[in-house]
Each structure stands twice: as C-alpha cells, then as structure tokens.
Image (spheres, helix red, strand yellow):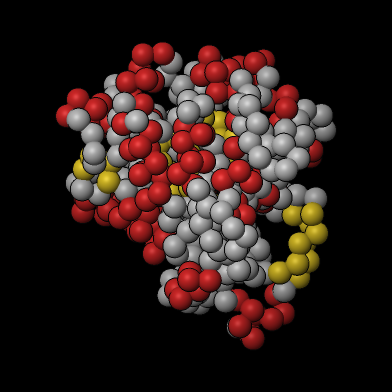
Length: 392
C-alpha cells in the first residue's frame, strides 16, 4: 500500500442480523474442506445465499500479499502457500504498471526493498527520487522498466529484520503479472476443486493516471478478457482512493472495497482535488452511506475498529462495525501479523522483533467486534483462531 497505507504504517456486505450470525457459525475452509465444525456449521460455511461475497465463510481469512509471514510477499510462492494453508481469499496483488503498460504485483512501485534490482549493475542508472503521494521516495520504480526488464529481477523479503527465516527464499521467485495471476487463479480452481478468490488493489491510481498509466481501465480490460468482471466474480477490487473505486464501479460489476487509513489522514485523490475530508469524515454514518452508494465494503485499519491508547494497548471498540453493517457494508480490516512489533502491546510476549506474541488472543478480540474478515500475513493462525472463535 501507499504512503497512507497502514496495511503498513501500523505494521502493524454486512449481511445483517440472522444471516451474519449464521455465518459466524461457519467455517474453516481449507484446501481439504471444513475443519472442526459440526455438519450444520460446515454446510453454512460452504455456502450462504446467492454466491459472490456471501458465499465466503465469516470471518473471512484473507491472505495478505499471500502468506507473507512465511514467504516473500507478492510471489507465486506466497500466493500458493496461502491457498495451501486454507486462506479464503488471496490478496494477489497490489497492482502497479510497467513502462509499457503491463500490470505487475508489487507492494509499491518502488522495488528496491522487494527485489534484487540493486544487484543489477545494468539498472544502476534507473535509481532516482520521485514524489509519491507527496512523499519524496528514492529507489527504482516499476514505471521506469519494461515488463521484459522486470522479469530479470527476483523477489526478496521486504522486512528481513522481522522475518529472517523468509530470506531463505530470496531469489526463488520473480515478479508476477496480473494476467499471470488470473491464469493461476483458474488453474488453482481446477486443481483444488473449489473456487479460488483474489483481492487485488489499485496502487496510487492518481499518481499513475497523471503519467498516462491509468490503472482502472487496464484492470477492467483484463477482467473482461477472462470473464471475471461480474457481480459474483471471485475477484474483489480495493483501493485507498475512493475515486478509483468510483471509476471501477463504472467499468466492472465486481465487489468493490474502499480502504481506509488512519482517522486523520486524507485519501491522496482528495488531496489532489482539494477535497478537505479525512478518513474520520468517511466513517461517519453519512460518510458510510456515501461509500455504500458505490462500494460493497470497507477495509479499515484495525485501529479504526479498536483504537489503541498511548501505551499501544487496545481500548474500547468504536461503532464502526455497527455503523457499516447498518448501511450494508462488509468490513475487512488490516493487518494481523504474529510478530510482536505488529501486535497491540497487551498481546506481545518478550521484546524480540521476530518472536510471536499472543496472536490468538488478538484475533479473538478483533473477531468479537463482528468484523466480516481480516487481512493477515499468517492465514494458518487466523484459521485456527477462527475455529476457536466460532466453536467457543
């Protein structure tokens, strides 16, 4: 995510009433089926009403950039492992363009921290500083490379200090294109005998549109090509920029989700157009009603669901879940990670940056708010936590 992304900065359709609670009695859907549930609950997990988002178990487990707690993010190794661990949806991927107009999956257009580009002397001259959503950023940018050039690079672990074991896989995988992901999704659906879902994001759409590399039209063209641009298609689209979701709403019929950063932040498209509203304005009842006019869900930072105090400990939940459900929006907050630095202070154990804290306790606390799903780097942990929650 971008400079407003607390999928990073915190490193950290509401179906209403009876239907939602029935789904909370659902599901751990893994590659092999439903685990640890009665026959009735398992049946509820497998299907709930008219397809689309409502066919997914709740709380939905979304593999954040794949299973990025165990493999370098946005690689087929990470995506594949997320499915193997049982994730309901794989966030494949964060979409950024190449110079020749292809969409590739990288967390950011700057790729110095997620690839071995610095080890390629032929690309040393491409290193530059750009202003990305108001923030000067130095490195190598996807829009300065052709797809053929990017295919010469290999992915590496983005946060090796927290995930030293993931560096074992540095260099094993390359950079996927979005078209490759769509083909992979079909192949995995056939192999596994169940529908595989993906959850791509348009990254910095205003920034790229100003460069003549509009994202939404490219996304829509590929979804149309592969027959995945419909209301019940297994592709959920997300963006931190509400106008990107509004643009997508006119191009495709897919489920759409507006991502929401910290309460005091402003979406970058609002900054560019002079819209003074902040995220705090968007999560008022009036703001949520507006979002529900063109989106089916929101992806708030976890802090908008349960704020932290000055010591980093959880306080009382806000009314966001109730308010969003009242206007028919689902909530998929981000991001749950097992390591201590990314957990609320009251769930940490010890002080090692790569040691696991009480992530089960944190999952339980967030699930109890009634959220519809969660982005997580550790889908296996989330699935066990969900089983505990729905059977508890």
